[in-house]
Length: 94
Image (cartoon, rainbow, N blue to C red; front, side, top):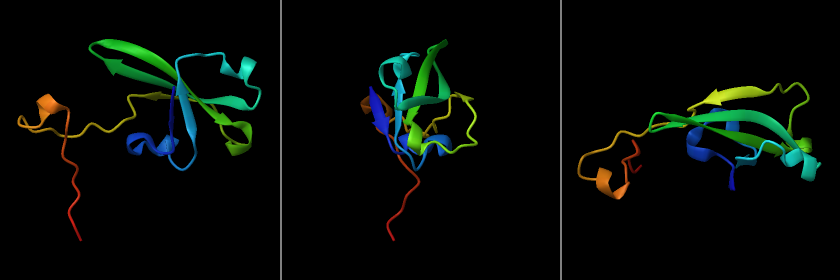
């Protein structure tokens, strides 16, 4: 289970706490949760499906269920940092 306020800068998941989970039926057990997005993530030529939930009170009345396909930003990596799983962000000190 992952809970993010803003996972990797994805606009749809920004500014509101979102539960990203592999189970499609969480609202059956947790009545205060509602499905807001279906997240499709491609890894190694396979596609994985996750479900994004929010508390009912945090969802705008006009929100419609939407599919998100690979919404996460992919950083550019250097050969030197890639083996350690680190990457450079385009941020400079002020």
